[in-house]
Length: 554
RNA sequence: GCGCCAGUAGCUCAGUUGGAUAGAGCAACGGCCUUCUAAGCCGUGGGCCGGGGGUUCGAAUCCUCCCUGGCGCGCCA
Image 1 (cartoon, rainbow, N blue to C red):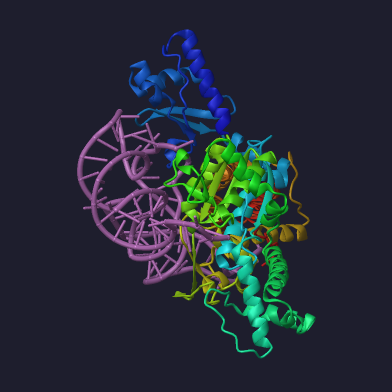
Image 2: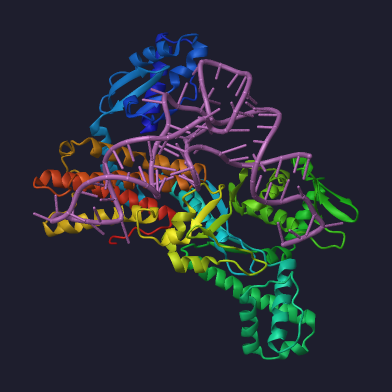
């Protein structure tokens, strides 16, 4: 809709320049927006105001000239006005709005999709939790966000791959092995000091018990080094399998699981360091190898290879991101916990050193989740083992409520997640509010069927039966859905979808309570049924983007 | 000390990459079920958009300086 109007405005500008009524010849980046107030029309453009300076005319005067060139609008609009400081307001015809309902039926579950990102390959990497413990609630928010952003990008035509980066190299795996090994010895009755820097959670003991059951006491006789390695491998695999299972229960699927260790095994970490040295971005100091990230605006240079010869996590991240772009992605999106924000400048430096635009890497920061129970904070700490796992929360409140709650706020603002509220089946709980609206339409359909009334097909509806203001308002809101999806995709902001859903549900509930869909007049019933089911389709599509189900009955 | 993010109604938050009279949910109060699901609807209040200055036709939005809060500043991952 916006694009159709924008084209008309451009044509009008061209017309004015051809006729000489306007002189600048400029085509400014004007906007076409939905005004905040209905009396300002359905859409408004600021084109005239942007030309004021170049034309040396008052904005309103320019608007009048444009207005004359815009013509009568045909079926698209029936009124155009100049208002305020120089806005041009368009009032679209009812016919045009109800035509949107036909669009919705034509595209069905694909209504809202577009081709804005066609031909672009994007990777979304998210969760990527170390395989040293189960996913906790913070990972859940990252999972819901990454998954929804991927869905949004797919819906707007991008070729999207979802990836999980497994940090299966480095110290933390050694710590995992050591933690398991020590617990194992404790289980065998040995007095063993269990250090603070080992993983404290109960799952460590459970895994150690598993090994004991399966393999008996053989690791007592093995060397500590060998045992720790074996435990690390076993534990890492088991924990990763658990993570995968938790994600599946949460409805999150990855196209690819990428191992950090693999980068080492193939020599790619060394190659990455060598490449930066060749390009002159790396240097040696104090027997360590540094990447001069300050060349690209970072605060200080960063170590890639330590003086003891060990590589840092950063070195493998250099290799990893180098490899990502080699796989042909035009854009790479990393979803991180917000506490890693200090890491962004050095990763942007990597991207630039690789000769790419820094914007080819987008880092999406996901803030902490504040877990509450009836308003009381629930304490969490990985170290002490007192954390709430994603699995526990999903089991308690359900996948739908959990995902919806995670996506209700911008990802970079902190989120209060109240378990009691998420479980409540009431007006306070926004998930049920939206799902209930969808279920209501389904219920109406079931009732219609008992009256031998089918949801009409395209062309079987007399839109003149839709005479109410609120019916028109619903059609207008449905018309905005594709633009909402596009905006949410472009900005990587799934919360825009939840806000839209909230608004659509409110309007629909209100309509439902004031008016009956199924009335005595068959033609009116059919038209209203058609409208209600357009709403249903948009609910289903939008919920699907968020990974939340659209139940037919509640 | 330096850097990043935030500060909008009593609370939790939106505000479409500068637009017109700043919105929603919750909480509070008052109403609505013999009719398609009351997990719903209708109505009522509620604001120095942290503060000062600047940029311009126009600022919650951009710049700058303060105030407050969160986070980050390892040859850890």
